[in-house]
Length: 115
Length: 113
Image (cartoon, rainbow over the protein chains, first blue to last red):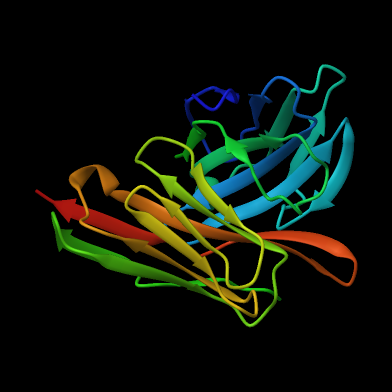
């Protein structure tokens, strides 16, 4: 158990819909990262928040947005969903803001299926 | 763009065999991590290497960071079915003052009993 909690574990929805994925980081971790993992794309970095502020942005689509709340939990919002958005979405947390140490602790992921 | 290429992509071996997985890049990283991911779970950190030429051992796993900090290898001795999983390397570094953390393409290992 990494200490990172993600909900829901599974989600099935239709194209055009909007979903919200939730992540609670490990106790004491200030950084939250979101990753998308699909079979043909590997693990793709989406966005990072540190103590409520956006820290770094990766390959995140404009249809996707995220935020980190004062209690440090984070939500990833995916809208106007397309079939290609079907993937595993992972949240990870770490203590530090930068990636120098690069030690991330991952949740079990939210599997999104868009039909 | 920093890329981390892993080889081989897929590996299926018999229990007791040895294997090496490679993680290569043309870019320099300040640190490199290896993770293992099992089906239905998130990646789990195995090790972090930060010094060029560094070697770390974790039971039957040996990790090495290249002298130039551009590549790394993971060697497993006497593989067991419990070693089955997706192995990912990840590199941390800066490009033009911006932090980057990149995952490799992954090596899917299956150890047969």
